[in-house]
Image (cartoon, rainbow, N blue to C red):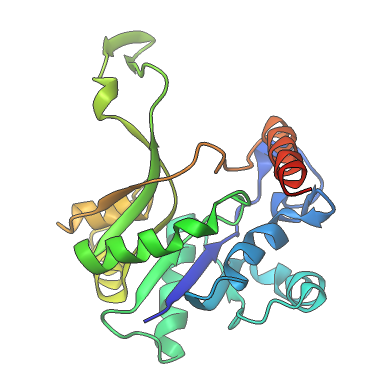
Length: 237
């Protein structure tokens, strides 16, 4: 079964300091979100894409991104919620409404502001979901991490056991729906999709990703993303 992809992009991007939401900022001639959608729209193992946006941006996104760039796998645009977790839950509800709530359907969740994900990793992610039930993309931590309490270091975790979580993260529909329902029923707020799956007792496999798969959150990130894209174009030239 091919993957269905939820792309939460309902954040306001206040740290970017721009007059428009960060997903529409220009990156090498295209909006950031257009780059992200293209990663999945062109992949043969992706069946449907559900961008999740602020309700007031849906018409704009449909006209200026989906129609303009011809993204054929975008099933529909989903209104987001107050928090990322609410947006993903809305996306899962949209899948159920569209008859895509099969228990074993693989669902990937990818941040709209991560336009540099390597889509060649999609088969490995889907294999991990088939094998374990859930997965997260990540990279080993490069820096020493400190736990800090009231301005003082309280612990230094073993860096060999620490990974930086990225997206896509994913699971079969049944596990995701159960984890998000449990979180809503019990008032649990997770830092990412994997944390909710972990709390629900679902094993989550770690798939090695790429350090270039940054989340564009600050103006500095936009400069770095532009440099990475320039490098890719030079390599293909």
